[in-house]
Amino acid sequence: MKKILNAPSAYVDETLAGLCAAYPSSYKLAGARVLARAGGPVPGKVGIVTGGGSGHLPVFLGYVGEGLLDACAVGNVFAGPRVADCVAAFQAADGGAGVLALYGNYGGDRMNFEMAIEELASDTFKCSTVRVADDVASATAAERDKRRGVAGMVFAFKIAGACAAAGGSLAEVTAAAQKAADACRTIGVALTPCTIPESGRASFEIAETEIEFGMGIHGEPGIWRGPLKSADALTDEMLGLLLPELNLAKGSSTAVLVNSLGATPHEELFIVYRRVAEVLGQRGIRIVMPLIGRYATSMEMAGMSLTLMPLDSALEGLLQAPAGCPFWKV
Amino acid sequence: MDAPRLKDAFTRWATAMDKAAPELNELDSRLGDGDLGVTLQKCAHNVRAALPVAPDSVQGILKSASQACADASGSSFGTLFASGLLAAAKWLDGRSLNRAALSELLSHAVEKLSARGGASLGDKTMIDSLHAIAQALSQAQPQDDLAAVARNAAAKAIEEFRDKPNRIGRARMFAEKSIGMDDPGMVAVLRMAESL
Figure 1 (cartoon, helix red, strand yellow):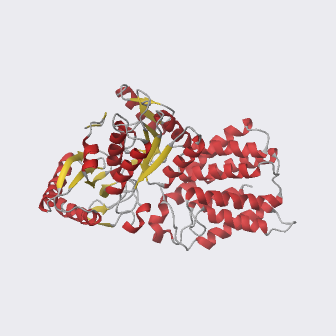
Figure 2 (tube, helix red, strand yellow):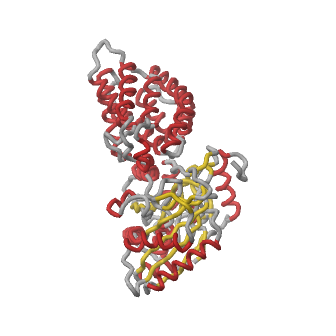
Figure 3 (cartoon, helix red, strand yellow):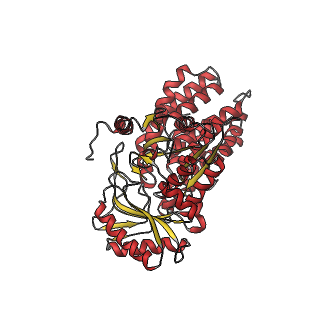
């Protein structure tokens, strides 16, 4: 393992300490493994909490910020957050108008958040849950509830965050988050694995010349494994999986995220985006506010993912509403 | 089963988890993310620290052990194990943990674990092992050694499921590959039963 760190067991806590040291006006710790807004919960605003494993920056914790999230429960690398940290995250996000738990569809995360909600149950605690399941490679469309949550979470964070910032009620923020979660679809491709600091092991094994199409962000198996293809061929295959699930008629609008899994550079992302814009342009589909960069990563994994989220005027407005965290400004 | 005996059992359990950790990590790395042994070792560490200050009742010890496991890790197995212990503690409420109650308590825990984790009987998880143990205990004769009954049932469950696919969790994605492989969670239950 070749990583810049002190002790593998300190990886997560030292990352959190560094984030708070770098951006004290944005972040503070609100529990051993809870990152929250520096200013605390916003009175009267619906709070939004998320949580999940470490190793995906800016996901999840990085998106704590104005117009985005209020608090995040942080787990070990690729492991769910503890129940106690989920509880503390809810408390750090509760401004009195209720709290939405918005996280990726993983069994461990779901259990821990559900147990936290049971622990917090009282007459005054109001909450709701939306799980993001956008990875089309992880289950068929008929089994959408089994799909994993990947880069589409960024769109769900943005839409829910904007709705909450605009004064939406818990029901409205929940509906907006659900609408975004239902709308977005993602497909990824992995070129090289990443190493989990505590185990020192690669997240998966793959030959130098091979790629895995559809692989999950923790190295979960994808759709096929084979020789590397050209950027255009890969992009076309990705769009070929995403577009049939989306109702994108001529003249419609969509958000696009071309995301690096960590090691893949911006240059390659723009080569892919060029093709996405070309294909969608040919179909008369308008792209709104394209995002190209590292938005949801797996440490040093090479690879990328493509996310589309069809937009109606309401979603488009929420997507473009001002928002800011140290990793992203809109 | 009284409080001192339960504390002793948890101490033996913790030792067994330390010992089994490398084996469980290895098994888990073939189907999952390879951290099952590490997870249970963290649980064992926290339980060992919690035992001396745990209340002097069976229910109190179960609750302390549950909290210790929940604090150890956010990984699914740790959370499920913690919620199983908590379900057992809540079920006991006032009842005494005698021979007859053991099977009923385990069946109750299986139900709660299934509801929490979403696994059903037959999915090739620790639920299948715990169910097998509960069944065997309910049929045990007065002269039988219950620890041996549990151990044998856990071992038999592993054999029975070896050639079936995993149907839930991360291992589900490797369903084909999981045929012929022992489920790491089921092996963990066997190691636990052996420590009784």
